[in-house]
Image (cartoon, rainbow, N blue to C red; front, side, top):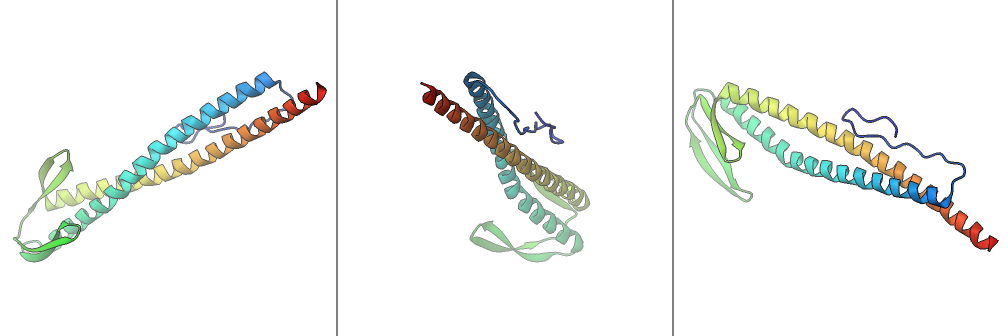
Length: 171
């Protein structure tokens, strides 16, 4: 195998061959199919992670924006139009407060000062964006490896077809 990427995903090597027997070709085909299956499994896992991040990043950014707005309005009460559902909004008066409550997941909500909440959300947002960048790099790398293995498979398969033709012509 070729070098791996920074996260340890092994690289596929372009298969060079000269002559091989039909049994060797079948062995190589099986190994290539197994490698393709592993790469596709990793790809599916990363695609799921990207989908989760696609949902998570806008929510974190929206929450951070709200906390920053509250920080700007420090000491003042203000009226807002907030979302109850995708298509349902209502008005509310927000009283001046030094505290915010953040959903952390798994039905957990904690109280933070506005500054702590801003720091936490900024860190979470940058971590999620970095993870997204890494996932996209990994997807690119995996797709290149899958293509290499598919080319290897096609080359060996075509070679077995030519061996079968030669064998049939000799009989």
